[in-house]
Image (cartoon, rainbow, N blue to C red; front, side, top):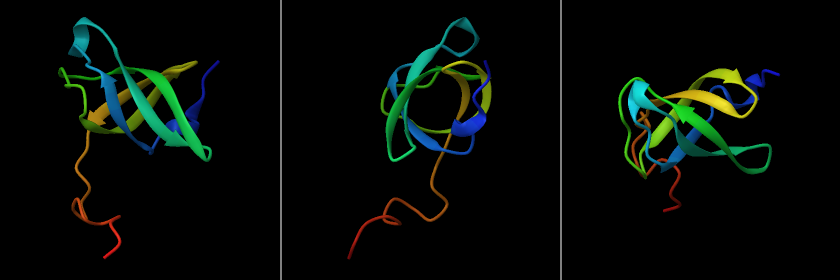
Length: 79
């Protein structure tokens, strides 16, 4: 069963991806909390990388791309 609700959400890689060689795991802020998904990427991504969910592969499995907030790292900081 496909779940498109994570598409467009930002997450953090918690287990590094290996590109086409294998998935990692991403923690996504969604539905008022955080959920983990298997994460596939075109290139290997290290633990701690910020990513954008770009596609759903089915139940609890997504494609991600490295993401840098266009507003900068201070965008969400109170100041």
